[in-house]
Amino acid sequence: MLTSPHGDGEYDDGTYDNYKILNYGFRLNYYFKIEVFMPEISRFLGIVVYMLYNDHSPPHFHAKYGEYKITVEIESGVIEGKFPRRALNSVIEWYLKYKDELMDDWNLAMEHDALKKIPPLE
Image: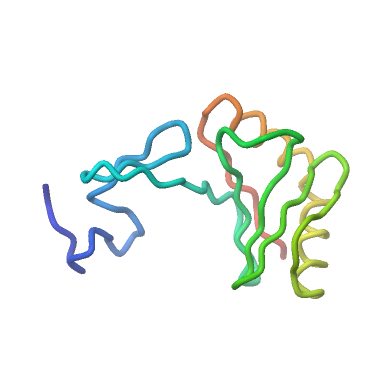
């Protein structure tokens, strides 16, 4: 196994040499520690949007902004969690623009397929 230039297993492109990504939304390191893998589908204005494989219904996505986290139901738009107002407005605007693409990604996640990136809010 090659070691990374940083000595921590991470290369400059964000890949890891000591992790194997499993197609069920987990990654397994060589010490057999299982970690939840959060496939990122978009990133904008410091907000990271992701979905989890094997997640519960109803269809939803997660967003993280610093220490804040929310969950947004795709069909109804119901939001749970806390987010700063400006960041929340940006997520809502992005969600309304890409609602169909989010549902497509949800279906891919339920099939354990690779998710498609969604353009950021411009």
